[in-house]
Length: 87
Image 1 (cartoon, rainbow, N blue to C red):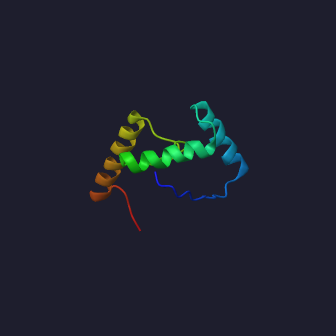
Image 2 (cartoon, one colour; image 1 turned 135 degrees about the horizontal axis):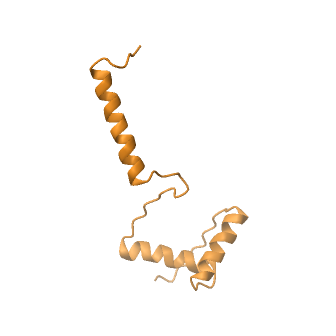
């Protein structure tokens, strides 16, 4: 690491900061700053890539996905043969 230290200030909602602090401490970090430094260093050293997924979005089970896919295929087939009227 170089001898130059740069201070990074990131405005955060207090609730977000408190949640990150709890998470960092549960992982053994002394502070959010310590957690952030390790995160940045890990990203640079290991070329870590992030994949963000909204886990709170409802997801279909594989069975439901298969059922809806089949229904959509049946609809498209019925539409082709004229069983379903379109505008």
